[in-house]
Length: 87
Image (cartoon, rainbow, N blue to C red):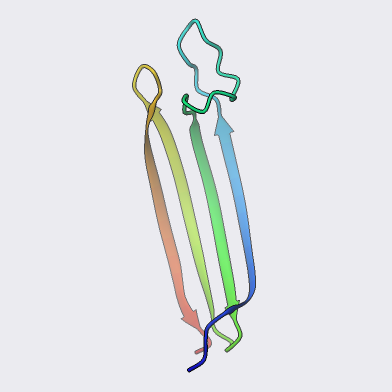
């Protein structure tokens, strides 16, 4: 049985990250890991295998902080996977 090990792997990620406003008395300069910020990203991964087959995975990702303290977030990931080709 042949093992399907990736021959080549590449990934492309594009993202837009914006700082959300924190509590009025504190400035969010991005150094406090307990304060979440809004984020959006698009990512594509492609694998070529030694037997000639390949796969692809596209993901759209969005995250929005919730609550007065911005310590919770709602995250949405929408994946799309293309099947094996070349088998």
